[in-house]
Image 1: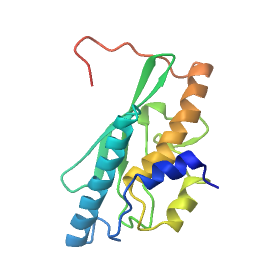
Image 2 (image 1 turned 90 degrees about the vertical axis):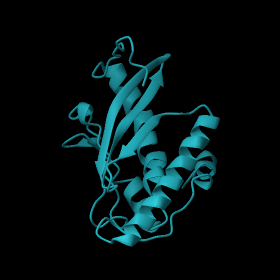
Image 3 (image 1 turned 60 degrees about the vertical axis):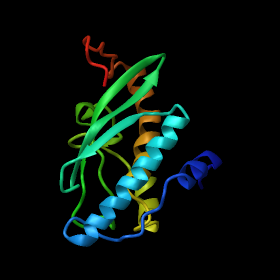
Length: 170
């Protein structure tokens, strides 16, 4: 069951059409264009709603993605490295988003810092292949995971605020 806010967010993220993975040549290039368009729309929506919470970029082939995501609590910005690879069976197989520096700090994580999305997100992804993409994985997977897990880790003292060195603004 999806709440109204989630439905609204999903309605603002363009759905993808091309069912192609990294081994599919020109079809993968088309899928990658759709991924970027969807991500751009989601990021722009977040910025207009003052809800900017991640930066993401990819290697030239679009198979390895990396960036930063953050959670703000008590006016402090907790920032984490985010990485993932596109599986060869993508989009039939969902991406596995990792926050390596949090590896082992919560039970809702697998080896290598991969966040647990098995129970809630992966069945939803499977029902929506090929329409869902990276933006959907962030909106329905990483975003809710951060909102629940980071405050808990802060409260337990396993995550602490790191002061940025001067000159580090991104």
